[in-house]
Figure (cartoon, helix red, strand yellow):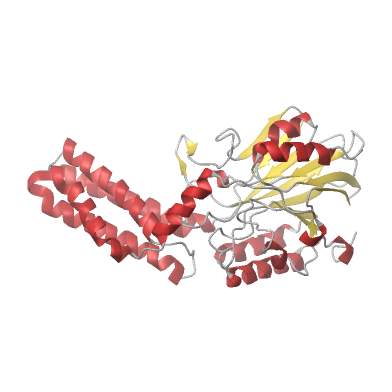
Length: 398
């Protein structure tokens, strides 16, 4: 089937009304942080001075150098965050991440003063502050642009083609503007030349859903993706607040991308027959699980290889029960900011860390939770730490 066959360009207007959605606690928290993000950092000067006073209080005779050190690091943090949008790296607000860094530094300095209020203790505190600065710089300026290509293989007797099928999974673009990350994505896709591309939702940043420039630039990225793709592209929707049904159709307008809106399609590539199922996400398991069961009850033979596209990993128990062979999703960002040895603090999944990122095998079902490409919006920091952006190239064979 030709990629440019207009019959394949299913739009939102062909689907039923979107399912209901209840706000997730994480999105509520992000909305509250967005209110703080609208406050200019200088408006919080009394807060910065209060945090400085708190940090230096236990240091006795060393309070003055400790206060100076605290103010210098806070100023450096603010400059680094302010330069990100000016240099086209990312476009988040300054105040929420600046406040988070200030609270971390204040806690560190206060505890150090309680334990070791001496010049050597101050030197150690300065070294630790420098480490925080280095981690912050890496998380905001470096890692968000280091896209990793994960190679994955799956062999199944249900696949009967003689040539392996190379399928590229891309998710969580979260476009604010076209940056170095999106440009690198397009270069990688052109180099990899997959047979099929699947997109599993969240095309705009949460802050940019109704931003006309972000919408236009997201359309440009997808249009360029269509130009370099050598095979069909399939897409599903992501989280309802991000992939709003009154916005996303315009982003895909006129593009030869097949929408799977609670739909199943047979995919014939390289001699393989794949039952490709796409389900819209509400992030409500009690709503989406019955819809998945109805979707899979389409009379397809049991020996047909089934690939499920759903934005979140939260339907894994149902996918195992229904005999799905491969389940591709994103949504968690791998936590986006991870701690060594512990991993993700936040996954926005009902199962928390059970399916935080990577490959999982349960029964006859393989699940892969991609870290995706972009970052959360609103007041969340535009940062990735120990969770670099990822696209996944699958080699499927008999």
